[in-house]
Length: 412
Image (tube, rainbow, N blue to C red; front, top):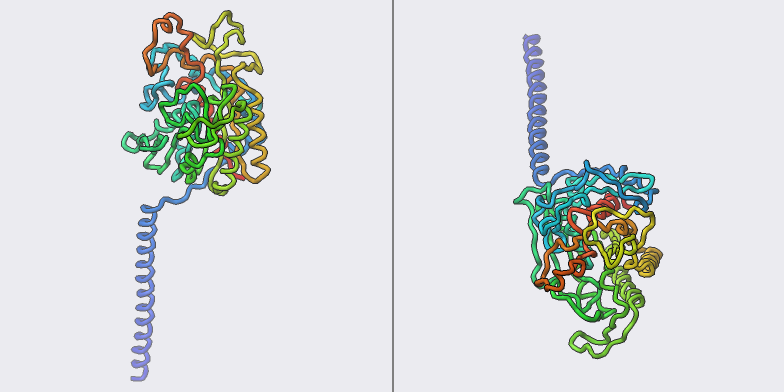
């Protein structure tokens, strides 16, 4: 009897032990299911952070990307077709306005000693996810902004992208909705307040600036992750007026040389960067001046020839046209060096030399004309040829390849 009771007791213990094990197994299974569900649910809400390999860009650290030559490349270029970009318009839509040749689209910039990584729109969008980029400056910077839009929009489905003009502000914005990326252009041709601030109605006989007044423009830039500046075209007049008061009273001003005014404006701009930019968040770039091919005699043509009917680049090494003022470039370099010494790093993207060779890549007469051409102009097409802006697709796409190379490098 005692033996039977012992056996029953052992059986109860065994049964209890098995029940405990089963309970733990059930709890474990439920915990696993809950973990998987929560994990999947969180994954639906928040995508995991992608770790990017920047080595291909970091490896270019010792290479001068701005010293090189143009190489004809029929396989890799253009990066997009003009008919694929619905945003090309006006000064840059050469194909839409009658330009028949396309060879100008098929040149690759080849730095001495290294290769530029090929532009990959999806990689760029992933790296820019959740960020705002603003191009700030004149119509050449608008040219580059529109190039960037065309380069990335080809991989974005129709319903997931949009272009907007912000009412009351000199701002155009392109949004890649899936990536929460905004690529904007802000019109400020002289960086500070000027009589050319209206984005479309800015033809003026004189250049008038309020040299210390930047806040009207700059308050629209403070929340950006990447700022890309330029300012040169509007400084080519020999003198300008520095306004002592407001634009309601333009009778009180000082006349200064363009170079002196440029120094003063860059100082105002630099002071604003020091005070207002979060340098751990916002990356800063400045595009250097670009060539204007108005004097064909400088590359061996006769008479008053300009970029009209030019179809090939200039191959003479170190060619430099007279419309590009090297002293203005040195003023910019000095300003950026002082900023760097003060802890603000603005990377200059030096596209000046590379554009000197590209007399073939301007719109010339193949562009939108905002007012009817006169009989005199029609009899002399050289008189209205645009040798300042650039056709798209074309040279500005390469500027953006250079810019992206710097953006995608590991930040130091």
